[in-house]
Structure formats: C-alpha cells, structure tokens
Image 1 (cartoon, chains in turn red, green):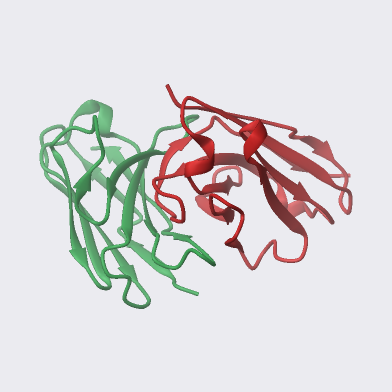
Image 2 (spheres, rainbow over the protein chains, first blue to last red; image 1 turned 90 degrees about the vertical axis):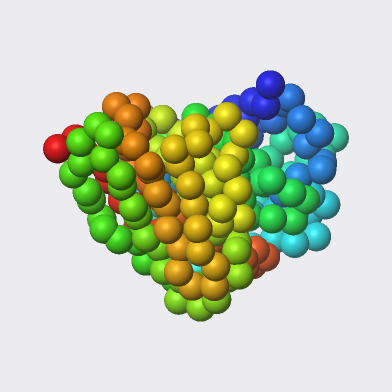
Length: 120
Length: 109
C-alpha cells in the first residue's frame, strides 16, 4: 500500500525558514517523480514544486522560486521542501504527491498534508 | 505559463443528474490533463488521467474527454458520495511546471 507521510509543518514567523519532509513507502520511490502541492485555507490547489526520479529535472511555481528548494533522498525514500523567507501568503496545507511516472506531473497518490502557518 | 480555466465554479445538482464540468487550457496540452476529486478535510483523489483514462478503482460513471485546449469531466449519474470539489490539472509542462484549475464545487440541489 502506497503511503506518503508529511511532517515538519508548524507556526513560523515571517522571514524564517522551515523544512518539510515526506516519508514514502509501498512503492519503488526512485522510479517516480514527486511533487509538493499546497492549499491555503478555503482556497484551491496550487502546485509548488516537483522533482524527477533522479533529481535531474526540477521545477517551481513562480510564487516560490528563489525561496523554496525541493530535494529527495532515494536511499531514504524521502522528499523534502526547504522553505526560506516565508511569507504570510505561504500559509497552507502542504501535500506531498507521487507522480504516475519517472518524469511526469499526474499525481496518483497524495499524503494527508502538513500545515504551515506563517504569522508573527 | 499555461493557465487552466474551469467552469462553472459551482453547480447545484440532484442525485441521478448528469453533471458536466469543463476545463480550458491557455495553450495546447495534447491529452496531458488530469481530474481530481477533493472532499472536505481530505486529500485530492485522482479520477482521470491522460484526459480520458479512468484511474483504477474509480466508478465508471466518471468519464473524461477532450484534447488540445478543451476538456470535459462528466458524471453520468450523480451519487451522494460525489458531492465534492473537482479540479483539472495540466501535466504537459513539467518540467518546469504544473497548473491546476480553480475548482468546481458540486453541491446538493
């Protein structure tokens, strides 16, 4: 059974940093691209960042480019999102999601999310 | 960046109704289009990928069609468990990016 478990969320002041983690199990992690998607309270889904199976292809939404860094450790079956210079508008539930393929953006499994609140 | 426009933003329907949701891409994306269902407090669930392929375990009352810039999700006979918000998503341009539509809330009439 595919499982994605996010952690690392919490309350953080504007301008500070936070690192999210996603622990994956139930599939061959290094065969698939992985993504982060967020959802602000009461709002729609917003893609944040994605990374291919071998970290050779990486992308970011314009809203986080230059502030967030995605990475993965295939030996640890883990995905990460380093978030720097956080802003109030980054407040959201952050989902980790598995792609259908090695370099792709159709998301077939999602975690339950970790909540990030940016506030002073 | 590719923009995705969904319509309507909300729809009121009754059990047994046929419901159609449309999604338009700002440029051609071939068949790189997915549909997701999200219920309150839950993670999104993949329904349709590659515009018309039904994800495993998804009821056959859900169907998708379209290619290029115009796409449709159809629920042939709405069931009580189908009341939720639906999102389209283009998967054509990763890398470097993906885009979701704004969502369509299907409500009980």
